[in-house]
Length: 493
Image (cartoon, rainbow, N blue to C red; front, top):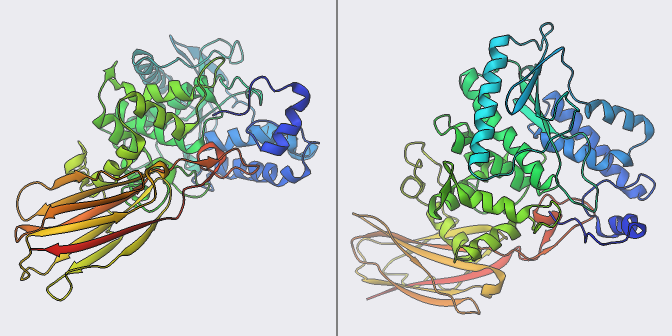
């Protein structure tokens, strides 16, 4: 995430933070208006650590670190207690990690479990390094060594799997990379959905990907951090499939909701992993057993010294262009592919990926051969699918679909798919004019069950770095929401 130009003079930093609302610690005396955000951050971290909400503890603690200096002295003392590393009575260092645990109390762990945690964590970290990712940064001797520290705690009693944090957040004007330490549950016995080992495995894959993310950009957009860490779970431990639980709140099931939104209450950012699964299944390249595209994305958002420092969706846009395609084309294809996930995802049929209902259905018949112009409004990074049916008794051989969408520079895209009574659906990307217009003629005979038109909005223009974090890309407000997309369907002989 780009916070602000690295060469802004120090004397202007406080004023810039107030005016532009950029990410990072802001002195308490600078903005009385910012105190509500600080209070929310403290309350959010307390709720997350207690298990009272579904919010990810990693990002709740990050939010608190951003606002810690804005708190009153009393609240700052309370925040510091939340931001202190967990305690432990024992430690053992391995090749890549040091595990910290206690032998008494509710958070005690056995020596066998310590070995299992170390083996799992080192497998995960070695997988990421073999795939070309930057290793988590050293914290010096803060945990007793320069290795990544993992603290075993009784988190399961609060419904928590694990989290990562840093001790000292990066400065507001960058660079944005940071070291990490992590906490895992001491036995995963409280979670019935999978075995304790499986829960340890996906937690390690997810949280240690956060540790890797910190080495690129601690302040990256929250939705992107969660979606990509959830994607990593299934890449490292493909048989566990814990991330399936999030698909009910995802672009698959909720295509009308913008993808790039981090919800303080809700799970949508976790469900966004399916977009990155779509990208990595359809755009090739692998290294160390993992798709290379995800690493390319993190190399674009890299906020360390001298790195590109794109924000989330800007990185996606850049990488897709480098891959010879565009976000506009990919987003339209993604929206259409989600209409039949059992066919278009490797695990879609086996894992019963959900399918949303069409946004609208147009029924053509002998008495209604033309739908007239109809408008659907579509938000940024969202889509709407219109299903077109016909009376089986109506003999019409073709269907003409006319589109009047916003200009393609706004991100407009469309795909039409014909579903036949037998055989595979036939999909056609629509070639729009620069103004967003198109006319497509399709087969619509008796062997056709229905046709669908997916209208997609890949608009990524934002007013970035808002004073209050919006939860969207670059903490911004989209300038491409609520775009009117007009279509007309006509049955022809």
